[in-house]
Image 1 (cartoon, rainbow, N blue to C red):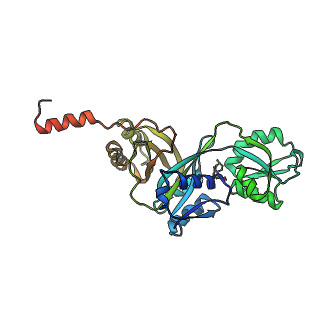
Image 2: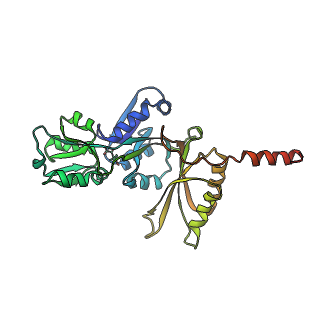
Image 3: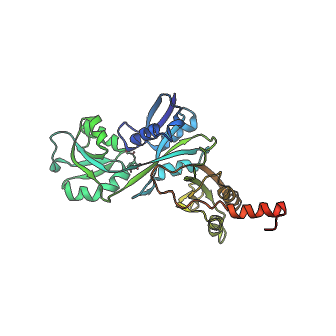
Length: 311
Ligand SMILES: O=C(O)C(=O)C[C@]1(C(=O)O)C=C[C@@H](O)C=C1
């Protein structure tokens, strides 16, 4: 049996993401085919700590939101402590139902409680449609639904399924201040051989830099001269030394792409404490970015020279 921690309770977007990873033909083999035990956690940090402690095999955690950006609690936890590795990703459309106890009207809603990333995505709608509401945050959308069911809040913004599970009804559906928002979730385990290269892969690294002129430019130059496409770059405080930063970079390609392997070696040389967070296939149907060049012509030319051909 495979055990997977996720941001619970049941009914979160994260719960739906885990179901998808479990059933998608490309990612299901990671779960060993047998029964999966899903273990709810209160934060991504707690889910990842369970992986580190060996109490679960994997954690499924939010990684990036197309409106709100990098999910910092996940990134910050991956950046320190024993190394963890990403093995798969999936993406979900993030649209919210505004869920209430049966009989609640828009005017009755004094407190709407939801996850902070969800709050950021419904704030305008709430301002325009719930005249008496104050937004408060809690650990997840489905935790918000449980709190509404328990009476400590009047409404939540959550997936429709969180309403079904908790006996709530929708006051509104398909709510989102910015249309088309998506969240990317990743499956994280302890270090192991990466899933095989598919040709549509992503690799993630985190590194520090010496306080020297040009150090960031020099590090990024190792990617640019190899035509490696970056899909995400950000910096986060190290939290060890004041005003020092770690750089988080997602790039297109797999550690088994020769150009990416070369770039990783060069980056390790240019940076401090380079941490490899994995190479995994891009979610089905998603934009993969430009693949790294394979230099097939150049390699054939070199082989010719070695053979003594007149090339
Ligand atoms: O609370 C949930 O339902 C989650 O799965 C968490 C989370 C997040 O952390 O971004 C996931 C998707 C949405 O963007 C809002 C909240």
